[in-house]
Image (cartoon, rainbow, N blue to C red):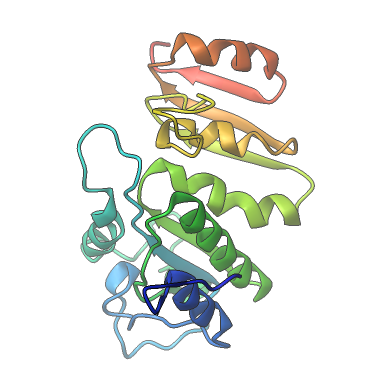
Length: 219
């Protein structure tokens, strides 16, 4: 990863590289992490939560940068017992939450960082679960999975199709997130709850019917 200097200061790439170079992932305590598990409980993690509150291309309202923090906060109110599995699943799965870190303001660098983090976690034979953040993080999240597996199917819950090639001049906009995922030919898509789609998205949808299956909200 290149490190450039601006006004005598290294950019955030250096921080990113130091974060990725650490042999051990840096976690929050159990109590402060997802589900608020008692610190006295010790377990080996199999799932790693990545808080990635990217807020760069939002076009209506704001607040996606606070998404991970609020999800984790709300999770502390969840009962840990599952009546169908007849157990507390976290004890068998093991869930740890990464400590918050700086997110690059440049959308391309942010997505690269997201992909690099997930790759590092996958390389450790752990499963990454990302909390966003706006929709534009999605192609970065799936990139290491796409390279690792022959075929990937995305399960997409949304009100919008997000199949625009670009929006407001940005190819990595939140409104283009799923289109960027489908740039990978081994990715297919099942979308639920779509109620809005633009005219410009229809040609791409028709051309890729073999890879895209939409369950419309109206049905």
